[in-house]
Length: 92
Length: 111
Figure 1 (cartoon, each protein chain N blue to C red):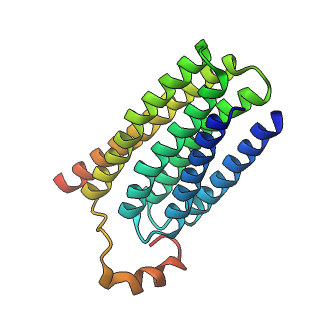
Figure 2: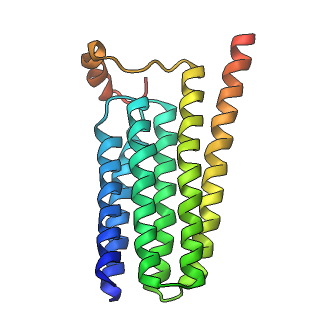
């Protein structure tokens, strides 16, 4: 039973590693931000699966929910900051 | 783990893999956003729903359902905000004619 969750966690970690390649290669700042956001979103699922591995899902699901909120707020904050930066740049 | 939960979780993991392939293989930021905002949302929702099916009708599965709802709302919004910010900053979308220069520049890293 537990092996299933360990396998799921390994798959999620492998997928996140592929996303980290894009984070490292980049090409533009937004590509890096997007890849970081995807890794963060994968972490939500990873936290939930870890909860089932350690048989304490009630604790880890709360962590996953909190992480989802923080991840969203982080992405929105950076996007808003860059947008404002660009607008002030064109205004002079 | 029940068969239905297994099927849902495996489908979700497949979509997460599709997202990773899309974010590596697609040519520019806007196409990558297209891959992320849809496939990633679907993949995450499916895995969490599979876990909720495994758990049964408890508080944990309710919270997993809340997480699914939040991701369903927040992920596309975050992708949209990033895209709008990128457009306003002056990132130009990829067109077929510029494919050669893009693959050329890919080796050099950040322009």
